[in-house]
Amino acid sequence: MLNIVLFGPPGAGKGTQSQKLITHYNLVHLSTGDLLRAQIAQGTELGLTAKKLMDEGLLVPDEVVIGMIGSSLKTNPQAGGFIFDGFPRTVAQAESLDRLMAEHQTNISCMIALEVAEEELVTRLLERGKTSGRPDDQDETKIRRRVTVYNTETAQVAGYYAAQQKFHALNGIGPIDSIFTEICGLIDQHQAAAPENPAAATSEVKA
Ligand code: AMP
Image 1 (cartoon, helix red, strand yellow):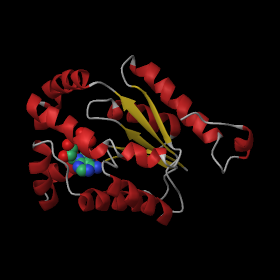
Image 2: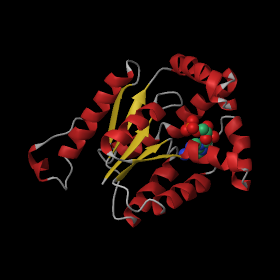
Image 3: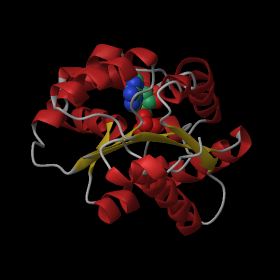
Image 4: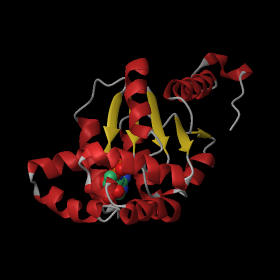
């Protein structure tokens, strides 16, 4: 199974690249932001609670998103693999994801991080806010809070995967197709070096 964590701050391009990756590698896309917005659209109690935090650019409690990911894994038993987009956002979520993967007799293949500077993120998200209808995309103060939350609570998740030799970062600024090609290159390189692949003995992956 190929299980990719697509990482990076809000506006880095994770959603855009996820759409291309699910087609290319035949994966199931699991975005906790999308799952939460679906709960809001359905008017569930979970959605109502989450909306208040999301509209302020704050994180939803770990147990809520971990529960949603656990259910999604169960409802996709035939999947050839997953792209996790916007999850995990805390080390506790990363630890839970490892446990969930082990319960499903699989593991995270690698994390790919898209790096984009804050000013570019703000420009991109304000532009997206004109059409996304998302309150958290329409207000610069909320956007900057989301970036701050990323820097203070989420960025450390990279270290969790680096410790497992699974972390790769690349520049998230440039043509969408060029970034996609780079991501595929990293995934393919990682797969070739994976322990379950017999070619691994002669391959090396650069972090
Ligand atoms: P996103 O669509 O990934 O930009 O997420 C939108 C908002 O949903 C975030 O600002 C958080 O409020 C919430 N959210 C999404 N994923 C998570 C997560 N893994 N942990 C906590 N909150 C999340």
